Image (cartoon, rainbow, N blue to C red):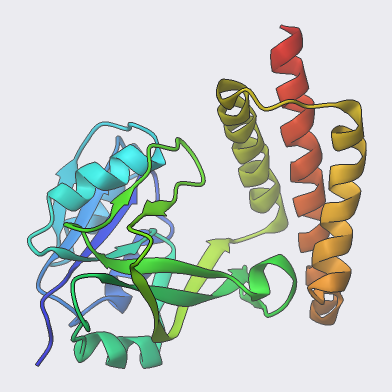
Length: 251
């Protein structure tokens, strides 16, 4: 017998993606919460056409916004997704028979990431794995404004949920570049508030090491041209992040 769980999604201006996601979640649970933080592109109208709960809320940064959305869920077990993520068939079967070992376990999910319709099986995205299924009484998101993480007790067991989350993160390389540009600014601000430094050696060598790590060590070259572009974009993001951190200190 399936243990009840809620699916929680935060979103803003995801009209191009949210319909595919909600269609892919059909039949998994009777409680899907979409927590919208001010969409102006028709996202609310699309969401309301599905049998889910639409909630409008304030944007407080990724971590705090996800915690606020989790509070609105009907059940304590939370399956946390983004608006461009859908479980594959194997994961759907696992969720339909979900019975947690205890409340003190969390479940990690492997990801299959796409650029457009091209899957990336190596490099930075080929080994993607994150905890996404957890009990909200034991686990919370931290307050990070970007690249948020779940916080749970050291003794918590991390189990693997079978299957993969299909993550159609961006539809094109230009969209990917714009997304990395935005994240670089957010992370630079985050590092500035943490007091992290940006010495010249880090600005020069971190992008080079990042590219080598993901393209060579993590076998990104096996993805061909898309693998090269992905490694290059991540290196460029690293350069932007530390360059903008340096600018914040100068200003």
